[in-house]
Length: 344
Ligand SMILES: NC(=O)c1ccc[n+]([C@@H]2O[C@H](COP(=O)([O-])OP(=O)(O)OC[C@H]3O[C@@H](n4cnc5c(N)ncnc54)[C@H](O)[C@@H]3O)[C@@H](O)[C@H]2O)c1
Ligand SMILES: O=P(O)(O)OC[C@H](O)CO
Image (cartoon, rainbow, N blue to C red; front, side, top):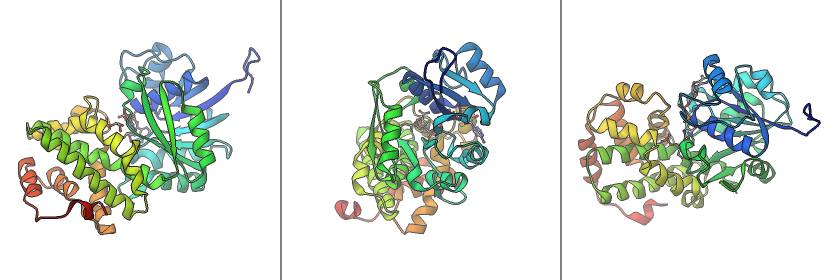
């Protein structure tokens, strides 16, 4: 496409304008894309276009001029080389349905959402494949240790893009990579999606552990045994065990369990002092994927017949009024077991 000055423009669409969508729109804009950032909120679109800021989700940070917010899905997807879906997992199907009628076959589809569809237990690439009529080779997932608050400030960040097609993964890598934002590829879509989703459960647990004033030993135990649990479910679902040692696995687990930016960690911390779940979620005002993911993982663990003791205890804390201290007692009081066999 040529613009009015005769220069070649490349376009990208980002759906939706939450914290992560806005930060990734900024990466694409820095890489030379004209970015249309879709939101269902006219007020938010006006805020971004007039004040050059997403005041609700990333206050105080000026957005590049190449980002244009819009509530018009057709306009957002027009001429897009790449469409980046960043809706919360619970809204992915609804957003994809709206996009499907306007999306060109030529547009590369990438998503950066971390979670499952709780009703069907489907991964996000499956939801997108169904709604957009695409094969797995035409879809890419982006994941890894990456808080929007740091990416928008161009702080060094590494992520991974996974696809059943190396060509699609490399296309996404080329579009998103720059000297502040390093992108690796991985063929293991299942592993990257499962790791990105389940680490949020462990991050809720890390917040709880810190809120209960336990020490570094407890946090290290949670991360390590949490990783064992993630790997066990992931490999049962068909993932490569190596993925869990990478950016989407241990990398994201470390950042989400230790960062002050983590919504999941903060929610866990508030739960520790007995604040009811509904109050925690309304105080957060942002998506806390780990809550819905705990339900999904609880069901997936049963479906795949894998042991996920941390997830099961957290499920009871979140949805069955178990006290966090009792949950810890139950975890520590489990029958003896073997570490390596557990890692499968
Ligand atoms: N924030 C981060 O640093 C970060 C980093 C990596 C991955 N993620 C993942 O990205 C996804 C989005 O998270 P976020 O942090 O941007 O969330 P957020 O809470 O900052 O924003 C969510 C946005 O989704 C919109 N939305 C909700 N339901 C919608 C619907 N039905 N239709 C249209 N829009 C809808 C909201 O209005 C809001 O603008 C999550 O899966 C999260 O785990 C977030
Ligand atoms: O803020 P959280 O806990 O939703 O985590 C965000 C990202 O997944 C970190 O990589």
